[in-house]
Every structure is written in structure tokens, then in C-alpha cells.
Picture 1 (cartoon, one colour):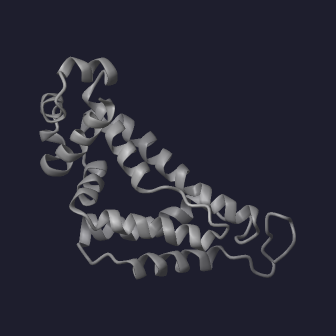
Picture 2: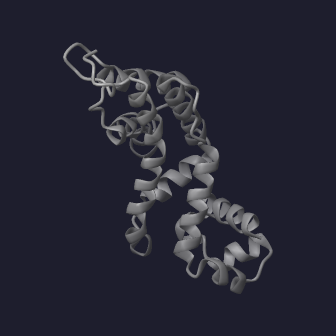
Length: 188
């Protein structure tokens, strides 16, 4: 039942937006009763956030290839592919759309997604691929920000080479250099 409801919620969010993704519409689409949804999720907002979280976390697994560059390229290439679909674009727009009922939960939603992706950067710091003072969240934001801006603001083309170029650009600023310490404490 959970998967059917979450799938229905994501489809409705993608096609109808937040306003059209009512509990009644989700229940109809999933073939369940509204009370089943309320029993499990308590509120529409909890359902929508669970649907978004599940969809994005499933579509964007965190790779562990042994290389921070390969991990980031693989992750952000998957993100570009997701954002290239109508569903991915709708999910991104929805996640930034202003809605007073979701605003108090949106901060944790985004901080959880950022923390999840920052693991790749932390592993790179641990392997001395990146300087010890690298801010994992900032590095992930530096790559994802331009991708999100293209979808939400400019409508410019997304492609896999763009993901690679953004990863390389962000990593260049985080690489160890002479006078900048690595995690092991040695100057690089």
C-alpha cells in the first residue's frame, strides 16, 4: 500500500502540482481509502514530504567508487538525468514552491538531502583527495545550485557533460595545495 500511495502522490505532484495532490486524489489514484492514508501519514504534508524524499533518495543513490570525483560525477549525472524528466522538474519546482503548510518541514527536508550527498565529500576528505577544511555542504551546493537554477530559473539545457564540468570546477577549489592541510595533517 505504501508504495502505491507514494507512487500516486509523486505522479499527481508531477502532473497537478501541490494544489492538485490532495489526499482524496492520491487515494483514488492508489486505489486505497483516504482513512488509510491519514492513519499512516497523519497529514497531507507528511505524505507529500515522504513521497518527495522517497522519490529523490531512490533516484539518487549515493555512490562509493573510491574516488570523490567519480562519486560526484555519478551522483550529479543521475541528478541531471532526473531533472531532465518532466517528473524530476516538477519535483524540484514543488520542493521550492512556497506553501505555508510545508514551509516548516522544508528546512529539514533540504538539510537531510544535503547531508546525504555531503557524505561523498567527507569520504574524499578522509582519503586526502580534498583539503581538510573543505566544507562538504558548500561543495555539494556549488555543484547542485547551477543545475537547479537551470531548471527553475533559466530553462537552459542540462546534460551529462555539464555535470562533469561543474564537479571539476568545484573540486578544483577543494583540492589540497601546498600550504593547505589534508585530513592526515600533512601539507599537500
